[in-house]
Image (cartoon, rainbow, N blue to C red):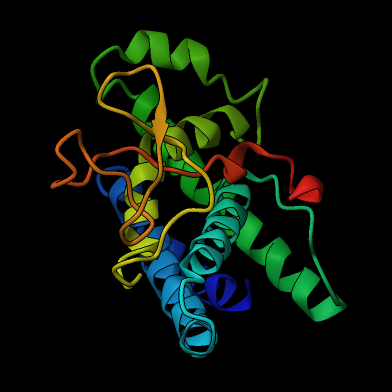
Length: 205
């Protein structure tokens, strides 16, 4: 996930303030996801030309990188690689803590609805690394990040197993186009993310 790391590592916390932190973070994460998706598509396109019908491999690769991005955002990334890579990861983690600290202050200052409940949920003394806030941020924005990482996926790229909610609500359908779920008429994309790799521990993926 070197390219993704590179794009996230270029985040400048000086550009963040209480009014734009959550929006700028989503923009930066989505840009990193988009470039990561472009890299994966470039890497797997020759393979697909050689082996037609291998679109599920592309979706699986996108899903794994998507999960890695989720781990980085939530502070759950276990892979630090060589000393240089480790130093870069630590620097990125420090930046993310600062950014989520800014987002926390916005919540703490009561600038959002339900501020009192949010303050109780995100007490920084009990969670100095803002893990709970980071988890909630990812839950709220994972669908947008998935759209970013799959924006260049090809028509026909399908996820390897049926995970999309079907029209009857009692079964699952497969994401057949650009690794994205469709509505019951199969004409429009839904907000559902077809993968749950981001909820699987990193060492099991």
